[in-house]
Amino acid sequence: MKIEFLNLGRQPIANGFRTKDDKSEEQFFDLRIGFDDETNLVSLMGFVDKSKLFNDEYVYVSSGSETMRRHFSAIASMLKARFGPSAILEIGSNDGVFIDNFDPDSTVAVEPCGNFAEITNSKGHKTFSMFWNAQAADAVLAHRGPVDVVFAANCMCHIPELLDAFVAVESVLAPFGIFVFEDPSLDEMIRNYSFDQIYDEHAHIFSVIALSNVLELAGLEIFDVERIGVHGGSNRIYAKRIGDLSHDVTARVGAAIGSEVALGLDSMDTYKLFAQTVRSNCQDLVTTLSRLKNEGHRVIGYGATSKSTVVYNYCGIGPGIIDYISDTTAHKQGKLSPGVHIPVVPPTAGGIEDGVDYAFLGAWNFKKEIMSKEKAFIDRGGKFITHVPSVHVIP
Ligand code: TMP
Image (tube, protein in one colour):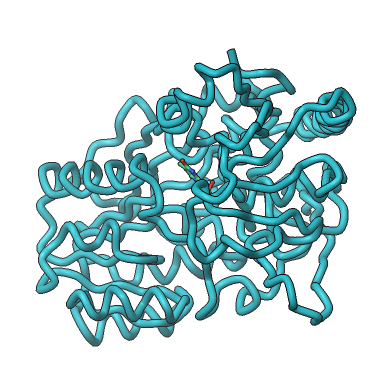
C-alpha cells in the first residue's frame, strides 16, 4: 500500500511555460508523494495525465547542455565496447542526442513527443511517436525484431504503469539481450534533500531496492549498477532476463542495495524525517531571498528548470523576489514560468551581467558547468545561492 509522506501543494505543469498573453486557465494539481510498503517504490500519490505532459509541444531538449551531450556520447561508446549490439532500441529518444551515435541500420526508437520524433526520423532513425507500452513493443518487433540492447535515459521514471513498461521491455529483448536505463537516484535525493526531483513528470524516484522488486515481477534482474553524476545523481541500471547466465551479477548490486538499506530507504521513518527537513529548508530559502531583496540586492533565477518550478511554487517565491530567470532554452525564453509567473529571458537579454547580485541556481544539477561558465559574474562579486542540500551561498 502506498502511504503519503510529503505534500508539495498545488503545482502547475512543471514545464508549462506560458506566453505573456495566454488568457487560458492554468492547470494545477496536487503534488503529493508516497512510499509503497510492499515494493518500497517512491511515487506520486496521483499521476498527471501523460498526454498533458508529453506531447508535440514538449520543451525539454536532452542535448541542451554540454554536460549531457558528452554524457550520451560516452555511454554510447561504452555500450558499443562492452556489448557490441547489432540492434538497439531507445525508449524516449528526445532529440536523438544518444541514438544518433549509432548507425541508423541498427536502431529503432520510441518517443511520445511528436516534435522530437520528427527530428530523429529525419536523421534516419525509425522513431515511433508513441508512449512506451505493449503496442509500442509490437511496433518495434515488427520493424526491427528482437533487440540486443534497450536503452532509456530519464524516461522509465516518467511512466506511471512501471510494471507494464518493464514487461514490454522484456518482450522485445533478444535471448541474451539487456536493458540499460538511468534515472535520478532516490538515495541522492534523500541525502541531499533535493525534493525538487519530485515533479509531475517524475512519477517515481527510484531506489535500487524498489527497482529490483518491480523488475523481478517482469522476469528481469539487475546484474550491474553504476552511480553517475548527471541530473543531481543518478543510477544506471543494467538488467537481464532472470536465468540468463551470460552476464554475471556484479558485487556493485549488493553494495548499492546494502547502502540504501543502511540509509533507511526501506523504511517509512526515513521519509517522514526527510519531509520535516524539506519544510524547514523551504522556509529558510524564503527568508534568505526576501532578506537579500529587502536589502536592495538584485536577485534572479539561473535555469528555468522543472525542478525550480516546484521550488518556486511550493515555497511561494514569485516575481516580487526573483526579477527574472535566465535560461538558454529558446522555447522557454520570453515566456512566464509556470504558476508563479516569473519572466524567463535569454542570458543575452539582461542576463547575469546586468547588475545582478545573487542568482538562485534553479539548474543546481549543472553546478559545475555553470560555475566555470559564469566566472566573470563570480569574479565581479556575483553570488550563486542553492537550496541543495541546505540553503547557502556557493563558495
Ligand atoms: P534540467 O535541469 O531540467 O535539465 O533543465 C536545465 C535547464 O537549465 C534548461 O532549461 C537549460 C538551463 N540552463 C541554462 O540556462 N544555462 C546553463 O548553463 C545550463 C547548463 C542550463
